[in-house]
Length: 209
Image (cartoon, rainbow, N blue to C red; front, side, top):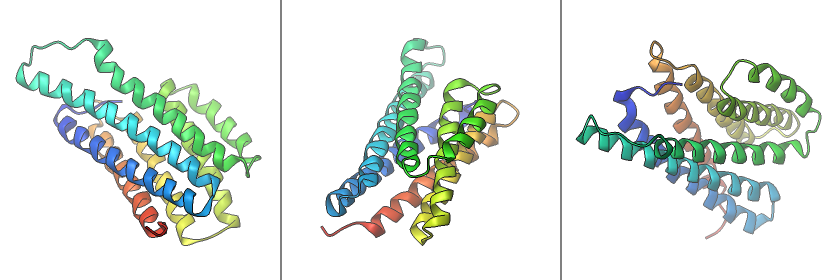
C-alpha cells in the first residue's frame, strides 16, 4: 500500500467525508431498526458506527501529520502516534465487516466454506490486516449475491453493488505502490462512491420522522 504525498490532503478530506457518511448510514439504520425491529439493521448500525470511528481516527492522525510536515518538513512524528490512526482504522474495519459478514452468514452458512478457501489463498501473499478486511468483504459480497439470487430487489442490488465497489477499492489500495499511485487514488474514490450509494439508499428507506 502506498499513499501518494500529493494526495494526502484529499485523502484526509475523503476520510472525514466518509466519517460523516458512515454516521449518516448508522443513524438511519438505527432509525429503521426502531421502526421495523429488523435485527440486520442493528448489525448495520453497529458496523457503520465502527467504520465511522476508524475513518475519523485515520483521517485525524493523517491530517495532523500532514500539517506538521507542511509547516516543518524536517519535523518528526513518533511512529506510535502515526500508526495509531491506522491501527484504529484496521481494527474497526475488521470488526465492522466481520459483524456484517456474520449477519449475512446466519442465513447463508454454506457460503462460509468458499470464503474460507478464498481467504487461505489471500493470506499467503498479502499483508495480514488488509487481507483480513478483503476476506471479510469477499465473504460479505458472496453472501449478498446468494441472498440476491433468492430475494431480488432494487435495494438488494444497490447494497451488493456498493460492497463490490468497497471490495475492489481495498484491492486497489493494497496493490498501490510507487509505480502504481493511481491505484490508491481510484480505490479511495470508489470507496467514497460506494458509501454515498449506501447512504442514498438508507435515505430512501428511512422511516417516519
